Image (spheres, one colour):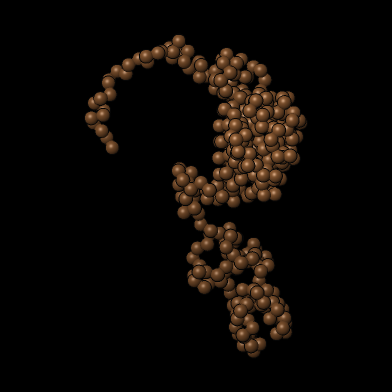
Length: 343
């Protein structure tokens, strides 16, 4: 809603900042931004090359994924821990994993020593996030971890105490020229956190694809677990617009009982047991629960003639099928995939 009173209070000329930048020209300000953005881009390019070509990095990544997948398949979870900015990365990765249906939780190293170690279970796997690979709070935690608990280290320094002591390493290694101190003289985390977060995101998507192979199923799951916000609205709109196809709703032909025309009554009853539909001699279609009630004499006149049923393709949208109408879902004239009953 427009507020004219508020608009009148805004001065025509905004004042200069009380403490202007040391070099306040637009060029110098933008040069800093470009330097940081370029260094972030180079850091990601370096990681891409590392994972594309370095066998040790590749093997460690695969081993890490296997350890996490094993934990999930045996009723365990992925527990992520880190201090400072690494702890924030752990929070973000856990949120991403949970939105993808991957059971994950965070553990603050300091809180762990004050009771939160109880979050760890024998089937879990622990992922330690540390740029240096030598975070004191993580080192202090090691003696108190459950015996046999698999440990993975996500680090910019694979050859480090925490890296060497882990079951596997997720490398976010960067050359010295791409570390913060070399770029702008201060070790404030930028490229190192970007590297760790990018590798962590790769882990989330890799696990998601392994657990649920079908992309459409992953999309449905993600929308179901993320009903709020713009993502939730987009998913709801997609669901509203999506129309089912016959392949998704048909009764597979393998579930239809098949008997010969000259089958005796016992064979017919066996074919009808537990089945909604039975096809006799590839000529007539009967409802399973009704077939036993039809006498052999009346049977010739009863049932639905297969050659008179409408045929549709498996990927055709379910539309214009009257209530109770039976249609055959076919691949071609010789291959029937299933049938559908209008409702």
